[in-house]
Image (cartoon, rainbow, N blue to C red):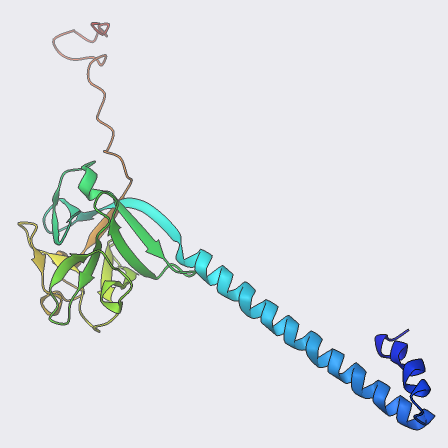
Length: 211
């Protein structure tokens, strides 16, 4: 039985004719249908908003090796450099990405400051990373390096000089090595194992490791 049919006896008791009762019953059913649709739309909107909030919290932790300076990007509070050693605590980055992973925010895990670019293209660290100046578009280049394009300023890339100093966005085109980075794991690279291999001095014999 339809939910609206439950109201039919009550409508007849009010003195309505059968035709009027049927019309009133149809109106009640239509109102219930509209209410159900509105509730469903509200549920979808809330669910979508919840999923968007979860996706914005997606974080990857790694280091960024600069092709220009041969060092790692460091977030030292308001200063951002690219001369950090592999495994340095200031070189550990928490990179927040959206659902598709192309728009990212780069945050220093140790300091909590975000890598940002102001309206003049100056690279600096900020505690509040919600502005568009702190959002970069991640691009994988043909040489397998990664470049970070400013989401606010078209054509401006994150870059560093050979000395590890931040370079202004307008001075860093996509093709320059100053704007090329390579992702590395959060820990230092494993050191090569020494000893235990045949050498001229041992005459091909493998010597045991000393304690």
